[in-house]
Amino acid sequence: MKLDILAFGAHPDDVELGCGATIAKEIRLGKTVGIVDLTRGELGTRGTAEIRDEEAAAAAKILGVEVRENLCFADGFFVNDKEHQLEVIKMIRKYKPEIVICNSIDDRHIDHGKGSKLVSDACFLSGLKKIETSLDGKNQDAWRPKYVYHYIQWKNIEPDFVVNVTGYIDVKIEAIKAYSSQFFDPNSKEPETPITSKNFFDSLDYRAKDLGRLIGVEHAEGFTVERLLGVNELGNLV
Image (cartoon, rainbow, N blue to C red; front, side, top):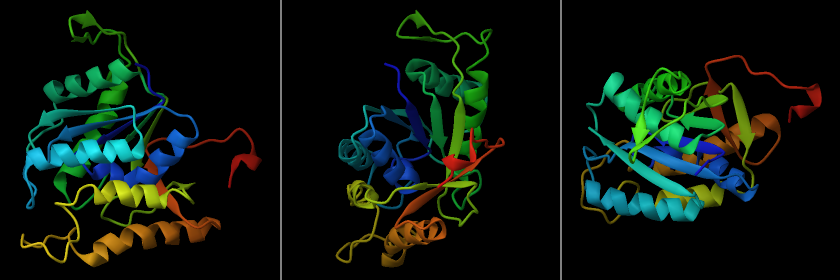
């Protein structure tokens, strides 16, 4: 199955938090989108890996993605080496996306930066014909995505561009709420974490509103890039 966009997250919920509204919008515009989680989030303070599996499936359904896979790398301990790169390459070659979206290049959680670099490196290596991979007994063709974008997570990194997601923030919030074990719940008896506060949950909306304000729309999501952006004409800018 060829996809237009393949979004990677170090943990289930990373994609929803970082670019859920953008994905929802692209799907409504007719694009095909898939999600690949690198780990099951088994080291998370709240819940279990099995609960996260169920939550991730529910969130994917809310967003409307075509497919969601999990590579089951070790949460907290995966590294950017040949073994892990090849597994990511297999996903890229399997779905042949034009666009790959992945974790923030620098963030509070160490897996986010590691995941970002791992996926970015794999996108380049996936285009090299002499790197041979196979999936389900079939040899895969080389494939390199045209664009690699990084969503913004905990840290308020200055975006290189923002996407107008007005009208789609509610879908994002609904998908994030599918991870009920992870976020704000005044009745929860589990330990508090940086992402379980009401302030964090509220920030999902007010950050999007602030980025939207800067381009004159209601809501926006920000992204960074590793290569120079270009437009065909000045009128393509919002």
